[in-house]
Length: 95
Image 1 (cartoon, rainbow, N blue to C red):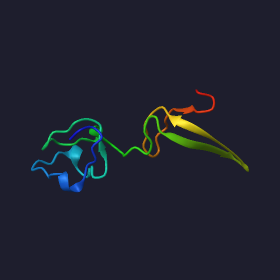
Image 2 (image 1 turned 135 degrees about the horizontal axis):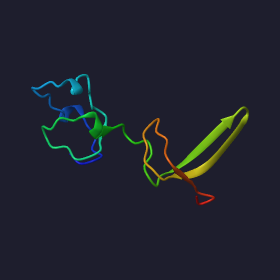
Image 3 (image 1 turned 180 degrees about the horizontal axis):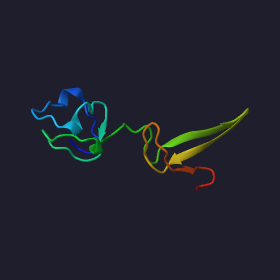
Image 4 (image 1 turned 90 degrees about the horizontal axis):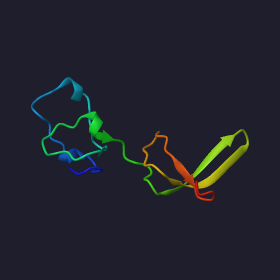
């Protein structure tokens, strides 16, 4: 598998050995950070949640305080999954 490949149930193989660090870990639906060879165990450090936004993609951010809502158009400087904090560039200001 190449980095950023999706892990699907049909490609996962149950191994004969059962290590405690792999117990109760189901990587289905996650993405790989690096290449994984067929038959190689998949530890937590090799996978991440799918990206919700990728570097260079445009988005709208907003902040609400009481009855005031401020929003602006930005470009993602980093990729990120749900719950991640990423850097963004303000498209109007260019920084």
